[in-house]
Image (cartoon, rainbow, N blue to C red; front, side, top):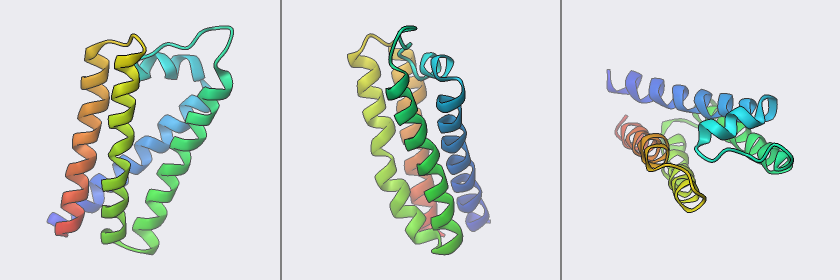
Length: 123
């Protein structure tokens, strides 16, 4: 049961971040608004694309680790990857985003990613 939950949550998180990455590539301005710091209409496309490629790649790497290496490697990956939403939280707070977005989206994501790491270590 614990193993199924650990693997299931890891797959959902990996797919989730890959979808977010794809959204930043396909609909960058609406994705940025959902991130918590809206992008300027006349600029920022390159940086939004960078975020899209980063997130899409992280999701694929996470899935590859889980499939080809196993739960322990994925757990270490999740533990390290939890730094990203914490950094995103700081970015949102520093650049005029709302506390609701910073804590509700990014801090809660970091907590869930850390929970996933703990479950994978226990599996």
